[in-house]
Length: 275
Image (cartoon, rainbow, N blue to C red; front, side):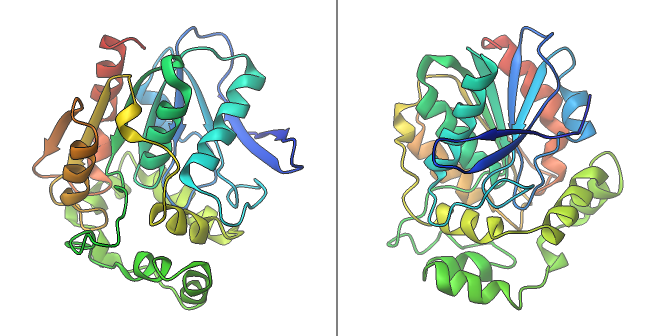
């Protein structure tokens, strides 16, 4: 696998950076990283999907992809479709973790029958202004609360934002010290390279996503750690209301990062359902 990005120039002049493990495999998995990210396909993701071609696209404002201020979740998913079209990819399965979860779901909604299945880990759920419980259980909801007040408020918060280690529990830190260490390293690298992507992701999460989740026709798997302090279990419950035919896995001892240890099983589930 190479971690050298490739580039696609879109009709609006923006440049997208993407990563591709190569065209030799028949099965294609589209990976959506969390927030923040560089777009790189980290080793534990590749290890979880042996024999699959993995494609990952850096969302606008991350990893060298041109920022798109005011983008929706659907806008970023359409960018992924543009990359898949360029590569000649037909059918695929897609997986998203954390902030990548909404984008995996949006991609499945937009792609129709091309999407063979979708799985999310600790995914954010759609936000509605009358849902007072959306923030319940978040160890540090300040960034997302700021985003509900608009782009300027979220950008102002970013100027003084600091990572709160309380968002991770013991199982998460163990995962970050072990097989998923590269995830933390990638997030750190992305934060240093940031070009507004984190701001735009948060604003996209708390405004209309631009897709109808109920329109997803492919099999859906929702994986949630019950000890998650960053995206609490209530978000999985909300997703399941919007996706009445989805399968859910509740991981009693896992948090935000440690839930990803179930990624190999989730990819096997996708293979059983068409990947």
